[in-house]
Length: 79
Image (cartoon, rainbow, N blue to C red; front, side, top):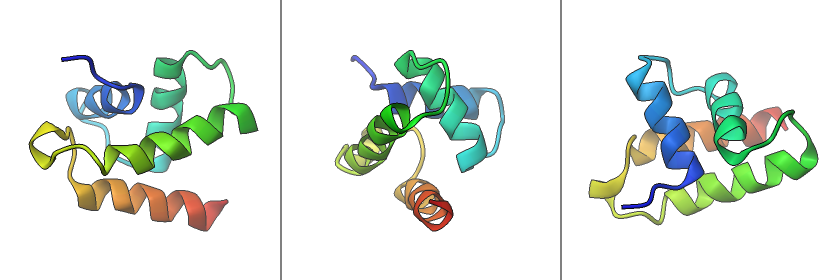
């Protein structure tokens, strides 16, 4: 099964025993997606990836829907 960039980034955090927070997921996602720095061009795909993650069947998710929704709230609150 081919995992998406957001799934690989979330898995990296889980395996590394890091908290699922925006400050951890952004660099992990950007690395997986091949971006070198945070920019509008890098953040937009991350936004879409979080939205699309919620469409995955729950059994396929690396983290819970609640955790992703928490990231999304944190992202949009800080934006």
